[in-house]
Length: 514
Image 1 (tube, helix red, strand yellow):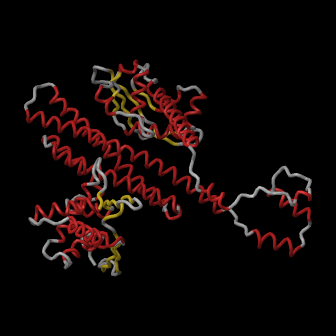
Image 2 (spheres, one colour; image 1 turned 90 degrees about the vertical axis):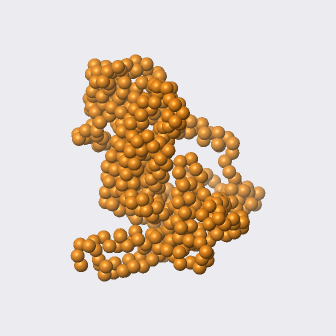
Image 3 (tube, rainbow, N blue to C red; image 1 turned 60 degrees about the horizontal axis):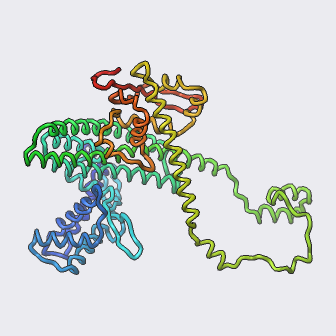
């Protein structure tokens, strides 16, 4: 066959996603209504509840939505029981009663059969004797985004383009919607990384290392491009806000300005979530490496059946006592009582009852245990924050005689002990990546920036940077810090590798470097 059938299986899979909706249209349950339109509306409502700051929808919320839909579109007032029954019916149809849809087609490219298994809606969380909440799967999101002609790899990039056009045209209410879509798309990428993490935890042998490396390289390049666009969007927003700040506004302009502030705040949330993708990717890499090492170690471990391979051999071969003692000695305690008093055989023994063992087995942690755990976490966080502040001091404290330094030049100025300590800490490499992904970092802090930055258990580099700037006011002579990734790579004595980043600062009140 010709080139026209290349990738036929993937194309037919994309078409198969719409099959459940057309099955609804052929259903005889509600012939007086357009079941395809109602099912598609429920998918859109489910997507709506996946946006920023909203909780996933449950049966009752979908029933309320169906009742409103019937009243507005068909001028029919359903009772609560009727709308609930309709919501359950459409949810069961779109979820295939909890089973994946399994459709079979002919692959005209290869001549074989293609089986398409997918689900549109899945359970987001479930409370025992409580509510079941739902969210769209990857296939469900693909279906909805394909109706807007946005391909999977370009979702975030195209949404960023829409957002830029909306900001430039001053259509801020539509920009809010686009930012909500961006949030869902970023969360979808988080979900993909989480699924790979669960696959690694379940069975690392199911993970193809070559496919994983290719995927991570593709994700890294895509996230880098998206990060640059997010930075330019934030700059555009700041410039747009400045055009409103220093002049009197009429009522319409005041409303637009309020919308613009909400756009800026929500975009900051999306950017923070997007930055977390880099940390998640690093954690996934560390987890995969650890799991592979454990799997390799398990490969060389020997499992022994003690009864068949040891006891039977000892009895059948009449093993000498000295040889038996050499084998058994490591299995017993190092210090043993050499005496045995036969008169103590009939004394009462402290044997725990089964009931006591069960009670101990299900006993939860005490308040003291919880307090110790909280204190331990507090101390660990304090240590992490202290190391991060030390890294910031190494970087920002190096700009005394010149405005531009490479990582190699900065580390070369450290004392030997500090140098060895820093390159041996895994957190230092994650710190460099996070610092680079922050783009151009302002070193002059205003009240608006302080209001947005909070301390957190993880990913709190912006908060620690703010703390460092407060403790070292001399750094305020600089306007911003910029981190650029070069083509050179550093290989340390412990064989760790890292990009030779280039750091530069600009002087306050000027448009050029120091």
